[in-house]
Image 1 (cartoon, rainbow, N blue to C red):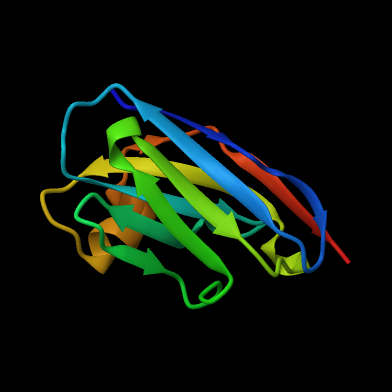
Image 2 (image 1 turned 90 degrees about the horizontal axis):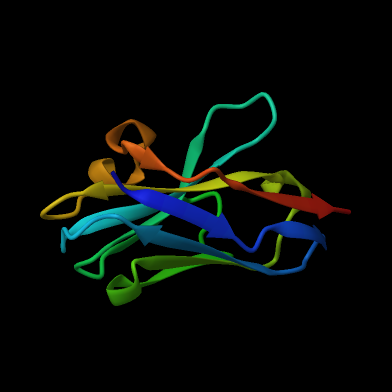
Length: 127
């Protein structure tokens, strides 16, 4: 079973930046997606960004141009860079892992395609 641990959350003012990291362990599969999702209070979990080990990245329209994703597949680590943060970005951010030989938007950006999740890290943006 994959284990995932997020870090880097915190409280910032609107317009600020944060870097979230997800450190994974427990798998030897070489081809996989690591996704970032968020869940705002009272809302469904939504996809933010994802990356496959083939280098393909996906970013939700709601954060495009402000958030970016990268990975170090050798270290099983994914990084989500959050910039120009808005109050509405306040949420619990989760990373997830799923092994896929090849990447598609549906595979990497759908929460129901992931079986392994981290515990989450809180991001709070104030005005």
